[in-house]
Length: 257
Image 1 (cartoon, rainbow, N blue to C red):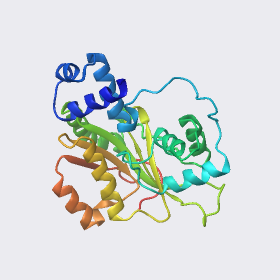
Image 2 (image 1 turned 90 degrees about the vertical axis):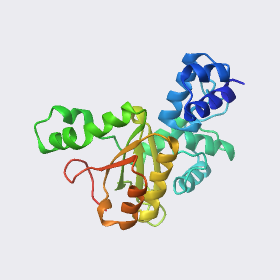
Image 3 (image 1 turned 180 degrees about the horizontal axis):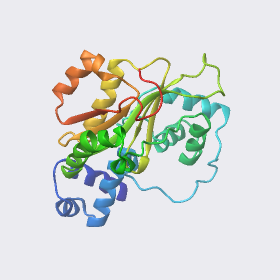
Image 4 (image 1 turned 45 degrees about the vertical axis):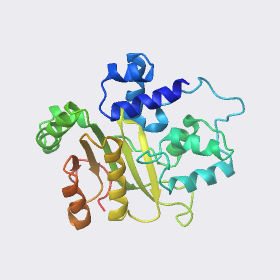
């Protein structure tokens, strides 16, 4: 089955096999191996299998009340799939598994309507700016990202913020959002009832690290002051191939926790 071979190809690439070696072992063409690897890098394991084109019969573009209740509950949990946080595709798959078939696009619309789709920082635009933000990017961010990419590692953006949703009372909807952006701005997110504790940040970092355990990972993060946490400092010291870059106040958006 094609999807099984695509998943096997990703496992082989994670083990250090070249594209050519992986293609021979998995029985796939080199372009297919590269496409599977790219899908994994951008969206995790759930993005590797190819899916039928078009909307499935009976799959709606909106979420009914029951589906929204399941979706809200899932957003406060950690995905079982190995994703660092929930992608729209991961949420759509999770709802489908419990009898609520819906498209990833419908999930995107639902998130956007509730102010749960933050935009990634326009980092590359800072490279040409003659400002403190531009100097910060050129001196502290750009060299790290270039080194991580050269080593075949993962580059992520992320943050924590208070959402601006007004559609649900504060007593029934968590106001705090942890989010990540991978390649091409793919969003991964979780919602919390209170500001994230150190353990929640470290669990998120560990999931990112585990996606490419033998390669470096860089995370540009805004909205949190990690230097105040000895637990997080110890975690970073134990994972020298994980580069956490804090966005200084004024260079991003929102408050700092």
